[in-house]
Image 1 (cartoon, chains in turn green, cyan, purple, brown):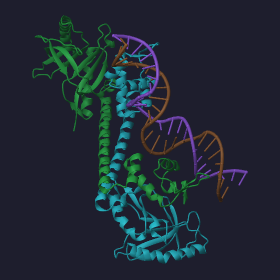
Image 2 (tube, each protein chain N blue to C red; image 1 turned 120 degrees about the vertical axis):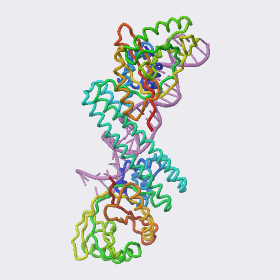
Image 3 (tube, protein in one colour; image 1 turned 90 degrees about the vertical axis):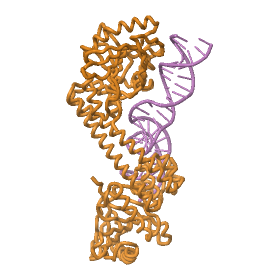
Image 4 (cartoon, each protein chain N blue to C red; image 1 turned 30 degrees about the vertical axis):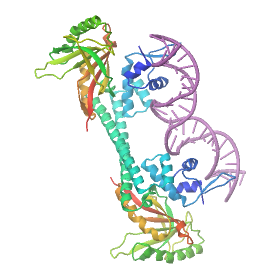
Length: 274
Length: 274
DNA sequence: TTGCTCCTCACGTCACGTGAGGTGGC
DNA sequence: TTGCTCCTCACGTCACGTGAGGTGGC
């Protein structure tokens, strides 16, 4: 018979762990002194302790181990459990590998541009949005092309929505891929929540679906938004994703007086590289 | 200003998380109603929330994030933190990959042999042992060769140790690699703890070093030990290790009357494949 | 007698999820 | 008035590590 310290050394485990396993009924001492409560273990119990440690090392929880040690599973049951464990570990490894890609993408991003642009990229599921929108073909991307489109369309949108008694919630823009001549179809609209609008020649109702996006929050004027895109798109590529859809801009806070207080969310729809 | 629910939806996080971040001082609402304690957030705070979520996604703890958000680290400091994070993630992936190898080795082991033989393999650091031993050349491995060596040497060892007034602690055996003719040098001895012995023509004092081993506990007679080795050595190879040293057997419980109560620890020194 | 080991609580870990129990605004 | 959202505790998670405070055997 071995006292808890000697048995622990052979384990090798800590006495605290043996007390813990005793408490859970996983491995009870062969004899407990009724006066001193000292625990005494038999050498033969090392086999069970080793089994317990084996399963723990494979990543099973103590509750699973408890039933494993009691139920004496068949070879088939044990194989199924081990295969489940294997699959779970593989998922963990995949998740950690993806996380590693994102960390490395941030390290890369530090080289090119400044600090802030990639420091608030979040991968998330974008909310679906119902947009009442108008479109305009502009000469290209960039504030010098997009800005005028907004200044033209936003008043028209306001007028038409007011006409239909619809309360706009938030301004939204998104842009199609450039055509061969460099021109771009810009979509400018308003989130209208659950309200209904009637389409007109100019006004369309579009439901932007819920998609996975890389999202950054941009604080400041619209002219500076252009400079967010380059590091953002690079980060997306570096981090094991690729663009998969049209970029959206949500004008969460639109402050004409003090553009530095404006807040724009830029969403890049993505898919994960396989 | 957004109440906690709306701000959380834009996050996207749970209100509970926002309360948690508030409590930790990571992200305090722009305004808290002094009467109702309602939290009100500004849209601009989404940028900070996004930053927080970014770092959390990379695996930083909330305490680290707190100092990151307060201290505004330089590019160099940030890079160092990210590189540390990268290294940590790589370690995690390595550890999980090794664990995966061990799980797969167990799945393989289920095919060949029965259940028990590999169910209590533990990788551990073997305790160092001081052994007073004698050697004998035997015809090969296997109980039919090793058994007689023990029956011959153990009484001689007992006699010599008694002669020197040394109290044996535990019987130990280990075996050199087979020579070309198949013969094997068997070492049979006793753990003598911290006691001293004088070497004689037959008796040697050897210190077995502390090495990493794959260890199984065998309950039962010595004749059955042979059948433990094959699956054990296969498991070691399957699981991303290889043998690296001489196998040891520790006779933890030696029961002549009822061999089924005997307990033997079989240790295979190993190195991890790189 | 002095260490050493043993004992039993019980807190702390990490980032929240999940009620319980209660209140304020449409 | 009825839901809905908000609030503040406070427990639970997982497998122990780490004291605190006290006792028994060489």
